[in-house]
Length: 224
Image 1 (cartoon, rainbow, N blue to C red):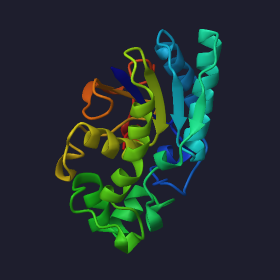
Image 2 (image 1 turned 90 degrees about the horizontal axis):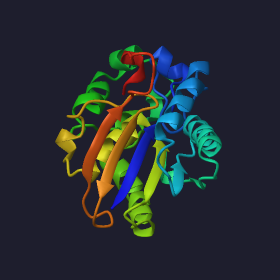
Image 3 (image 1 turned 135 degrees about the vertical axis):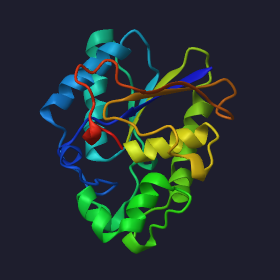
Image 4 (image 1 turned 60 degrees about the vertical axis):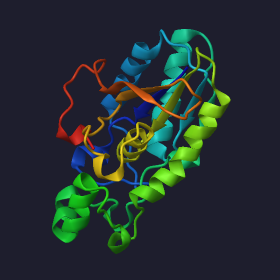
C-alpha cells in the first residue's frame, strides 16, 4: 500500500495576474507562498516520506526544495529529492505568458477546450501539447515510483503543476479524456492523495485538493 501525495506548486506572480505559465513560462513565487509551504510542511510532518519527486520548472523546484528543507527541520532527518523532467507542466506554446482574458479573445476554442473539453482540445494552433501526449509523458514516472516503493508504509511526495496534475491524477483514477475536469481544479500549494495496493495497477482517491492548512481562503487566481 503506497500513498502518493501530489502537491501543486506555490502561488506565483503570474498566477496572481491570471497568466498561463506552462512548461517554458515561469514567474517567482509570491512572498506569502513560502509561509504557505511552511504550513504545508507542518501539516505533513507527522508522516514519514521516503522520497520527494519534483518537476524541473523553477516554481515547482523552489516549492519542492523549500518543502524538503522545512520537513527536514521539523522531522530531524533528510528526505531525498529527485528532479523528474516528466513532471513538468503542459507545453502551452503561444499561450504561455499571456493573460487568460487575452487568450480567450485570441484563441477562444483552444481556451475553452483546454479548460472544459480535454477530449476536444487541439493544441496545434498554439503549438502546444495535447492531453494524451502529457499523460503518456507523465505516467512512466508514476509507474517507476510505484515499482520502487511497494511497502505498506511508503509515502511519496510529488511536486508538480495544476493542469498537469489534474490530468495525471484523474487518469490514474480511471477517468477518460472527456471526464478529466469533472473533479474541478487544483489550488496552489494543495495536496491530493492517492493510494495503490497493487504496485500502481489501480489507485483510489484519499483526498482531493486539500488546502485546510492554508489560513487564507483560496480565490479564483489560485485555481487551475
